[in-house]
Length: 601
Image 1 (tube, one colour):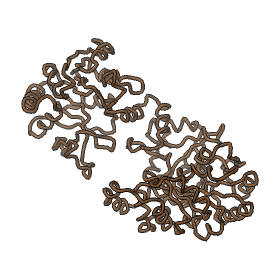
Image 2: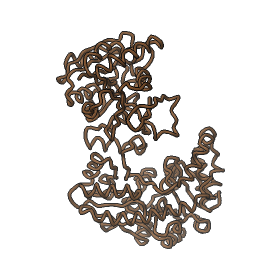
Image 3: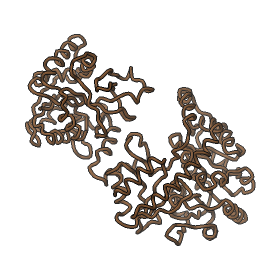
């Protein structure tokens, strides 16, 4: 068996990466695609590769020569690569196709050798490799029947996203027997070119053949084997995570993204903190129903956003502002409030990073569970001009009761100090929304109280970026509002605020589900011999690694071997010379999956 690679094109969408080199010479994790492809061919016993080259062909030939890594290389030139498409490149290699059974593949692919092994060992002679369509994919897709016959080819025009779960993506790796090439594929290829010209794609011919009975072409479905098609710089970045050469690099690349993990459907994210039980299906359907209107029209300005947020939280609109996530609001707080800020550690880094570490007065709990209460907070307040509290705290899950918070607010009011309370996770605490400080009577009573809340986390909508700040301090509100742009919230965020009232009861039910699942998950984590979870009133646990692994080793091992992402706290203040991770609470199935993998380790 031989391999045939089409590598004549320019790959112009890769910009600087292919300005002076052909696409197959693109480096992914420091190694050219062609090198990785040849290694995989060698692993499965293929010792001959035919390459159709064109753009910057001299670079490929110089790099590979006539033999590379034990694989013999033959070259066919497409001299008019810039005015033709890959149908012509394949046509130029027609005589080679009929010499032997052939693995046909394109030069912009990175893939596991397991795919080739699966393809070669399959007794069916003519196969198109396909994979279940996923959110990162683009290009030609197919539908299959129960016997792996291709019953439809779909380009971008014909693709229907409402049917996305029924589609498979062509991987652009094929196995053709020499009889199939000679008697079926090449005759159709030549006829199609005569009719349609040379600026077409070879897959179009496969589509024609698939529509005919008795050709023997079947689909080979993948089942978790890794591959990626690299068309642009973003594809390159994604592929470098999927095919990271080791756990260190993979963890580093994942951590620096801060999200966008829909591109990696197999990744289970126990790092970022999102409510898996909200919004309910009905609310999702309502947002989908008005998708075009929300996409095509401007959102309202701050005055309307304040009306909606005031309604959602039951406060007057003049006492609340809406941010593009709580992070946007936090960024401006330190600019408008003078002096130092007391802050218990370890904690959420957004506050010290936004305000400035030089203005933060730190205090650390004197116990192994990072527990603190009203007494410690009042001591901290004596040492600083203002006080910040994340409640429940992140990452410890430590919780201060509402009555204690009001006592602190009263004392700080007398001392003319601001009390900033971030209650992004308060709805997950044991008494839920009863613990919130976003109440009109509380805001009215304490003009020194500033309450921040991220809607993204507890309401399960981090993608639409919503957060609020509530206070009766008009001076602070006016100053902060001037910092916000007129359209800092998009239409999807505004619509969420608009319709939330209809689903308020669903949210209460979702929060109760989280509390129950959290407590169950806590008991399960206690069964892992090398872990010491600390009880939390949020939707995450601070977990000490007491033996067997370091925090970094466990984080890397889970990501590398199981595609599970947890938060390594090694470099976070307060965990010096300690081994701690943070693990989010997801739904029952995901949590049990993690427990299973932790026990296997």
